[in-house]
Length: 123
Image 1: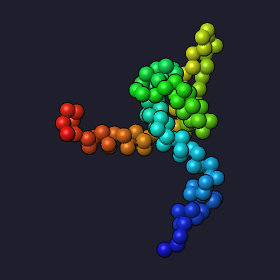
Image 2 (image 1 turned 90 degrees about the vertical axis):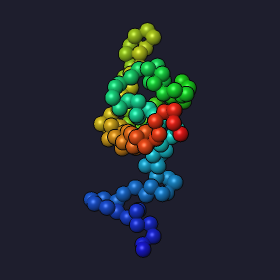
Image 3 (image 1 turned 45 degrees about the vertical axis):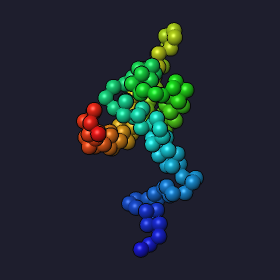
Image 4 (image 1 turned 120 degrees about the vertical axis):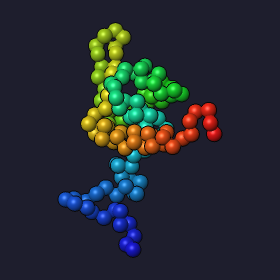
């Protein structure tokens, strides 16, 4: 068996070497799979939400952690941010096409897990 086969080039060009610490794909994976990143992506899967609506949809997240998570996901191109010039400004977030693409398997994973849990009140 060839060591590091998952790192070999595939298709038209070389792939990122995701097991190397300086790989930019690792940062994105860290953001998506962070404690709050996955919940932000799942929360935005069906509706665009304002900051406080998003915060209220994710129980247990602080405003600080939500802001940090959103900043990272916007920078990664997974979430878009729109500021309405009102007083105070209203900020709305939604998934980009890339964010929907990444969020789809996460939603599927979440749905699979919840289907296999015992009904509430049992277990």
